[in-house]
Image 1 (cartoon, rainbow, N blue to C red):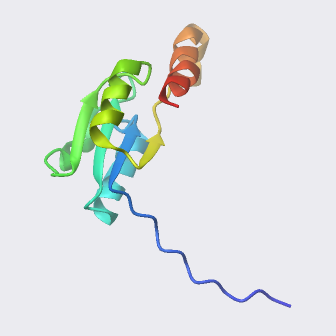
Image 2 (cartoon, one colour; image 1 turned 120 degrees about the vertical axis):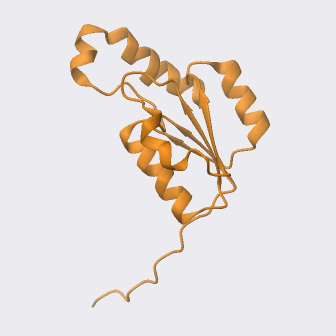
Length: 123
């Protein structure tokens, strides 16, 4: 007995998305893909532009009408409150993180602050 093939579900569309860490390698690809596949979705990219973030990764979408960059930290509760109040996000893609393991050895506090406390603040 085999299961009947299922029709692929159509992807969910969003009116407004917050993407954290969008200037990093993965985040910039996610933003670019979303703007291609969901051009009417308003995207706010929140990134602190630390060692892994680079706005050059997003140079090709900088002028897109539905793309906004905000320099800031996910640890900044006041900034997050303002963003949520002003943009009415219906989705969040959280990619902001300290990610290089070798750096966690020399500065573990930065990893705790961003990856744990920053995520808790965002939630």
